[in-house]
Length: 456
Ligand code: FAD
Image 1 (cartoon, rainbow, N blue to C red):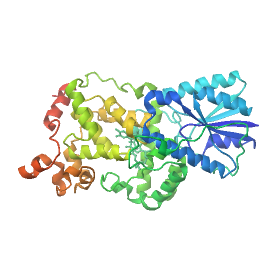
Image 2: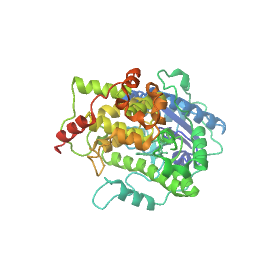
Image 3: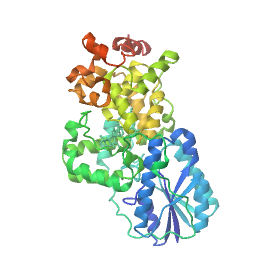
């Protein structure tokens, strides 16, 4: 028997149900990744993710070769290429991970039909990209949870499957050829501080995190300068780390830090079950939003200052500059820059979500769009009118200004928490910095928001 395993966002050998199922009969397996041009066409070809993908494909290939196998890479339309490879290998079965976006749903349906027409079967496996499958827990009167806390209660009570070991040996049919694997160095426009990809690196990070980071997570996860979060998000996004394994191992490690970490991983599953039920929420408001976001020249100029990290609010600018330098931003930073764009500048959340997707190495349709909607008040936040004040947030989560000075060199000489309000610096000191004035005053921003939402 021969099977094809179609890799998408699950680029690993460990804890991989489709691979396990394909190897079950003891036959040959084609591990296949298709570089799908329509994914690029839909605006997902961000350099940071392409570079991480290149690392991850190479690592996957190396791990397969250690076991006598290799990765097969094809380019083009996924459905066409999978059918072609299945025919070349004379495969009976195709296995892949379930996914939640509208694109993935359409791809799965087309693939199933095309394979069935050729007399082959498609098997789609859940709990590859989530710990608990979308739709596995639902409230009484709906197909998904719209509020996190009750979801988390049910999610926590679900039993997780056992973690699967990587296979010992794989035989790949010789007749199936592969395109050359991409290299990180081939991708231009990559952020200089981008992290490394690949399952080997993802596993190393998880082990290091559980050994020496997670215990302090509950107290320190919001400390912007301390950088005390796991940074596992790109690995969870590309599946170079299994969410089931991350949760199982964190639970085994135990403690309040591990519990808080597991709760964050559950947020990931939460957003995926929302998107699975409401694929349109990737582009449209999850909850109806009646007033109109600001548009036009001044809104665009303010959005551009936000993208460039030149809003005049130091903690906002620091976070935006971290994003362009690393292709990653601290969660507290993501929250406060999203609040600033949508609730102070009053610019559409889609503008911010697009910029994040262009840069984030962990940029993910479910997590990104639904977190943006959460902060914009069009999503699942039960307090949709909360506004984060960037000065208060800066002083609370970067009390000594270390994070701001790290990313905003214009303010490197300003001591302590004064760095959060450069407009209060004595005249001469202020005049000597090349740092912009605020794009809008906070009272004016709040006023825009209140008028738009009818809360004056
Ligand atoms: P940790 O704090 O160590 O958390 C562990 C894991 O839990 C993360 O790796 C992540 O997979 C998951 N997680 C944590 N917080 C959230 C959350 N709020 N929602 C969903 N999952 C979470 N995360 C993405 O993976 N991709 C995105 O595109 C993305 N866009 C975001 C946009 C905005 C506006 C906001 C506010 C948040 C966004 N997040 C996104 C969620 C969160 O900021 C990141 O997952 C987190 O900062 C990644 O860092 P970490 O791995 O060190 O997280």
